[in-house]
Length: 206
Image 1: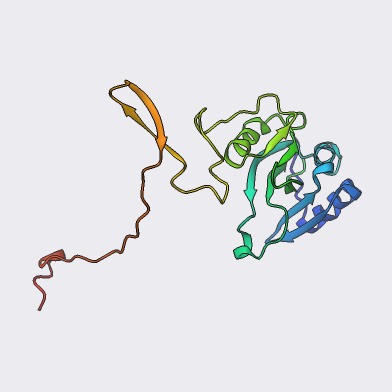
Image 2: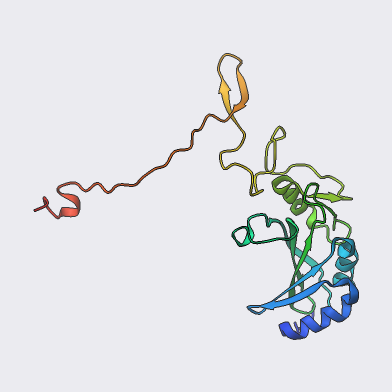
């Protein structure tokens, strides 16, 4: 591999705007990082262009994660709920970009899978499916990856209770692990400071 040729964020923004054309919804520069947003209908085509366009050459997908915007901005947010953000790297041109796309249906979030573009996305999409319930159409093995097979719900959604819906324990009578409704009762803990008379060698209080 030859020497890397870094491009400024502003130059990269212009380059990607030219490469994606009307498939680009928005491009934003913040803190030296470029974030581009495409619509779900253009997601797959835009991904191919980002990989194949000579001025882009994003050969590697480093990460993909789901985002739930339902509580963003302290409830003032009024847009689509579920988003997927990917981080792409061009080793050839030494440049990076963040690619975002919003699921058009809040009740049943579906996006095309990027498996055919970057095979590294396989487990990342499974994770987003498991934790957020985002379905990736065309994925060849879309099943849970972190939670148990019998798990109900998607634990990274903002409306998922922190205690979960069920808990599991070993039942000595049945001699197996069983699931049961959560029995944890939320409680408020008020911290108090306890200092012994000889704490840290300071001696008794006056």
